[in-house]
Image (cartoon, rainbow, N blue to C red):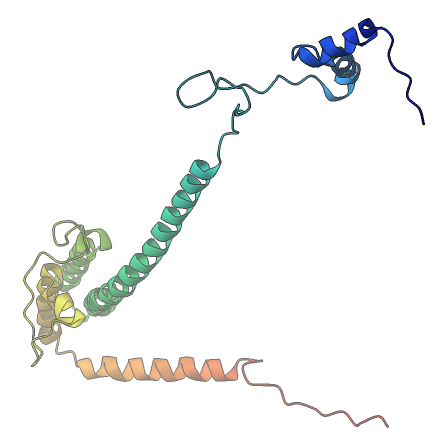
Length: 252
């Protein structure tokens, strides 16, 4: 193929000017295309560039666009908060369970002592009331027993027994407890017996028992009979025992 020589150099002038001028590019086409698709995609602001300085070249060739905000700080804060809450919840669960286990045993020991005292005094008061009604006893003894029972109920109330007068905020007791065990260990029974209110009303109950010649062994026998009766009721409940399994004949 033979290329015809260019007769007039002026025909190349528009191409030479376009090649030598960096400011002249296809902005018109790009602008028109951008304006055309603005209704579809929406217009976007141009990426910002860093100003000229010792650490950059003024945006020529190595211009940096603004980075998106990193999520590392937010994620770290969220994980730290979640870990703190989980650790706090787990620690609370263990602490509360341990405190409940110890507090329940101690409270049960003190409650059992208070219940025994009130049971003895109430039984005496009821017996004297019945005897006074049958004119076999004067009413003075009945009234005295009723007053003793009323005073015991007031002082052995749970709010008084477990009040701040006898207990520290951490659940330890303020009164002195003497260990009766050979190893020197303090048991819940020792703490219950040493409680000032329990000790006071235990003496009163013992005095009433001695005054009216009451046999405490009878209480133990009655308690054993009651336990046996409750056990028998549990055994006689329908559905308590496993139902006999009936095997169905095989269908061949």
